[in-house]
Image (cartoon, rainbow, N blue to C red; front, side, top):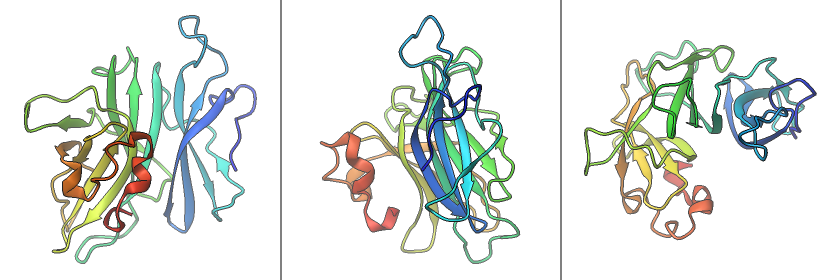
Length: 225
């Protein structure tokens, strides 16, 4: 269990939208934290950041990082942790962990005044993190040269392994027909993709989930689990 942070922390106003992964023999739990001091322009929700807590067991106790992973001026929310699974021929000196998250109403980060997806990466199983220089670009075949800004609320993020052994990142969004797939990952030295393309959910085995957008993460087939 992870409750709201102590007074003075960025998550003192509450915690939500958790995502868990196992890396380096530890349980990583990312979450959005709401600041207790609310800005006058938004007296209901306040701004949000992304935190990380770590435990040796799924039931805890979880120990929070002293500072948030993401601490912008807007609403950082909906983090999705992805651990890059082992692959023959791929260097595995330390396990990579990727964290995709939504950011909105930010004047500090270019392109995130409305909504965007941001990326952080770790090459030491979550001990240290680096933020990507650019926003994640979600594209569609209808407008291939444009990064979409109306789909940026990740519900689920996974690395998918196809039958022939290739791997790709899939992000499922909180809207019908909003699943995005990356190009195949490199087998030798995979890096977190920052461009993903919209894919019909029927191609991913999600035909029954379009009418239940808030519950679609539980509809993922075994291939994406």
